[in-house]
Image (cartoon, one colour):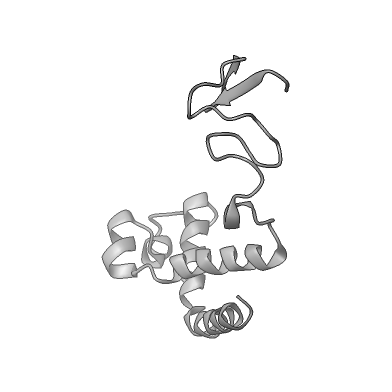
Length: 123
């Protein structure tokens, strides 16, 4: 781009006296901090990151307290068993998933320990 400069997304032909104005270079990025070198945010989605994301989601569901949090919202197995919610409805399926995740607490401790170990050793 000969004769053009960029200032945070706007182009101005020929004007280069402003200190904030830099010429646009795809390898270096634009004046607003864009470009290819963005650190960890540009890491590709791999099977390892997908596994970590799934583990994080299961951890989030497993720590929900049935009496303090779920009962206030009607998301307990007691509601499903007593007929307040149909087991085949979407709400009933979510309650079943939350209940099943509560049984995964011990395996989650082991999986979390493995992930922490791998991250400490390999980065």
